[in-house]
Length: 164
Image (tube, rainbow, N blue to C red; front, top):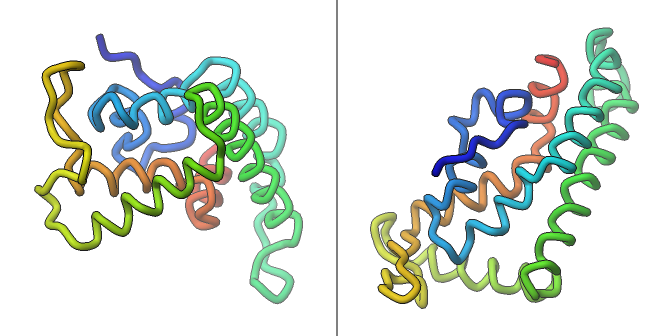
């Protein structure tokens, strides 16, 4: 059963649904729970409320400050990142990891992925029968990582806020 991620249409229209696709277990049972946590209703509601509450700040536009954008936008982006970081911490702990261990695991997988082709399986993430899993290919891992870190991209954040 494919369950769509309800905030995808609000926040991820131009990302080909990487978060939704990963949450539908396309990246294997080993990584899917981490992205599914970002599609939980309380979190999606919190993100939608954030977008509604602050969208007007981005309608005003304008260029000011050293970076070319109002300082308020940078502050809101920081708040937006914190929403996702809190959720990540919660999901990681729910899955029985510490945030440090999760980051280390992703770092190890990233290092391994850099030395393989996109069609190779990550070490320890090959196909299995028990539990049934197709495995995690390098290309799928990079898609997972892109979806997981999308909130930190300021340009993506601006697109989301200006669309809202």
